[in-house]
Amino acid sequence: MGISELRLLDPQPDLTTSPQQNQPCALARALTRAGKLSHSDSVLAAIVQDHCDAPLDRVLLAEGLVDAPDVLDAQAELARHGRISTKTLAAQADTAGQIDPRDLLKHGAVPFHTAEGQARLAASRAEPLAPLPSSLQDLPVVIAPRHDIQQTVANLNRQALTLAAQARVPEEESCRTWAASPRRRLALTLMVMAGILIASLQFPVTVFALFVAWATLTLIVSAGLKAAAFCARMMQGPPESTLPHATHGQKLPKVSVLVPLFKETEIAHALIKRLSRLTYPKCLLDVVLVLEEKDDTTLETLAQIDLPPWMRAVIVPDGQPRTKPRAMNYALDFCEGDIIGIFDAEDAPDPDQITQVARRFQVAPPDVVCLQGILDYYNPRQNWLARCFTIEYATWFRIMLPGLAHMGLAIPLGGTTLYFKRDVLEALGGWDAHNVTEDADLGFRLARHGYRTEVIGTVTGEEANCRAWPWVKQRSRWLKGYMTTYLVHMRRPGLLYRQLGHRQFWGMQAHFIAALSQFMLAPFLWSFWLVLFGLPHPLDPILPRDVLLMFGQLFLAVELLNIGFYMVGVSGPAHRHLMIWTPTMHLYTPLGTIAAYKALYEMVFAPFYWDKTSHGHSLRDSAQNKP
Image 1 (cartoon, rainbow, N blue to C red):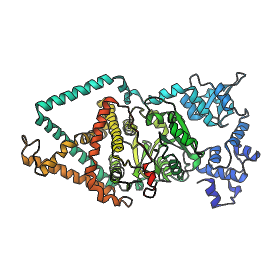
Image 2: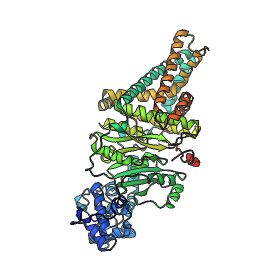
Image 3: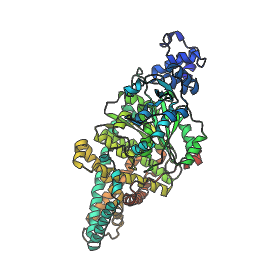
Image 4: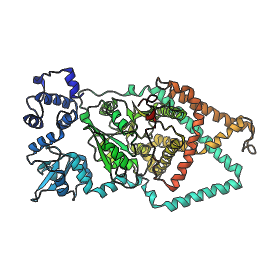
C-alpha cells in the first residue's frame, strides 16, 4: 500500500499515533526544514516504511512527494560534505585497487579524490554503507545520484565488467569452452554422419529398425514421465492452494525485475503500461530495462518515454556473445533488490504477482530459492498456430511442470516470470552467457547445488509466436539449448549423479533424452501410419505384420493419451474454447521436428547463435487480443 491509498483511507491521519513522530528520521527533518515535505506526508511515509523494507528517500521518490534534486540536497546537508557533479565525479573517481567494481555497482558507491588529494566516498545516501569494506565506510560521504555513480563505475571498468558478464558461470558448468574447438566439433559430426550413411547403405533395414526401436523406447519413457507428472499434479491441487502466506508483520522486501529488450520498438510502450499495473509498493520495485549498446532503435524509443522513478535503463556494452543471459549478467550488479525477477518484453503479469512471490519467499523453506510462475498466451484466437502454442503452454505450465516439481525432480525453468534469491543467484554465477536456453540450464544448476524450485500459481500473459517460420526459429533455439544443457551437465556423469541423487539424475535423463529423441526421430514413428492404413512398411522384411500393427497401436495410444493431457490442460475457464482444437496438435508437432534438425545443424556450426524472436505482432489486433 502506498501513500495515496493511505490518504484515501484517512485523509486526516492521526499524527500522534505515528511511531516516527517523536523521533523523525534525519532526512525527513531536513526536507521538512527546507519546506519540501509536509509533516503529515512524512508521517504517512513512515507508515509505509513500517510495512516495506525501503529507505525513506525511495518511499518519497516513488510516491512523487519530493523531487530527486531536493532529496539529494537534503542528503548532502546530512553528509556535511555537499554534492559532487557528474563531470567532477567522472574525472576524480578512483576504482582501481582491490575492490570489485561489481560491489561498487551493487551498493551505489565509488571512492574518489578531491583536487586537494583528499579521499572521499560518493554515495546517493548519507547513511553508512555497511556491506562495503571498512576502508570505504570510514571515508567522508559526498552525495551524487546513484545513476551517475553506477555509470561512472561502469565507464571506468568497462572491459572488466564486459568480460565478467560473459564468463560469470564457472567454466566447468558452462558451454563457453566449446568456442575453442570448432574444428574438432565439425570433424566429430562428419565422422558420425559418415558412419550412419555407410551403415544405412549397407544395412538399410537394420538401421531403420534401430532408429524405430530407439524412437519407440523414448516414446514409452516420455509417455510414462508425462503420466507420472499428470498424476502428481492431480493429487497436488491448485498451485496457489499449497502456498502458505507470510504474516503481515513481516516487511516486504525490495524486488528487482530484469527486462531484457533488443529491437523491441513495437512493444516498448505496451510493456511500460503493463508493468505500471503491478500493485507491489513502488518504493520496493526496481524495474531494470536491459538494453544493448548497439540497439539504436530501442534506445531512441525509450528516450522518448518518461519512465517512472521505479523504472530505469541499463545499457550493456557491446560484446560477444550478444545474448539475453550475457545482458542479464551485466545488469545484475546494477539491481537493488534482494529478489531478482525476469520478464520478457511482451509480458503482461498478474498485478499482484510480485506480492505473491515476496510473501511466498518469506515462508518457503531455505532450499527454495527460485519461484516459477505460470506462463500463458493472451492471443490464442489469432490463428491456428497461436491456439496450438497456447494449448502446449497450458499443459506444460499448469500440468506437467507442477507435477514434475511435486515429484521432487529438477525442472527446466521458463525464460520469464522467474524469481530468485539474489545471494544464491550470485553465488552460482548468474546465467551461462553462451547457453541459448539459459533458463533450462540454470534450473538444473540450482538442483546440482542442492536448491529447489517451486511453481507458484501467479500467471503472466505472453504473445504466442503465431507465424510458422518464426515459430520454427524460436523452437530451434530452445532445442539447441536443450542439447547444450544436457551435454554440459553430462560432462562428468558420476559427479552429476552424486549431486542430483538417484531420482533427479534419472529424471533428467528421461526428460532430455526422451524430448530430444522424440523430436528428432518422429518421422520413424509417423511411418506406422502406413501400417494402420494397411500400406507397406519398411520393416515388413524382418517383422511380422502383427508386430508392426502393435507398434502402430502403441503410437496411436500415446497420441490419444497426449490429447487427453492437452484437454485437461485447457479445461480451465480461460482456455475451454481451445478444447476442440486439441486433436489438431498432431499436425502441430511436425514443426518441432523441423526445428530439431535446424537446431542440430546450428549445434555444429553456430552453437552460440541467438535466433531472436520478434514481438508485438498481436498488438495490431487489440480488439481480438487483450494485453
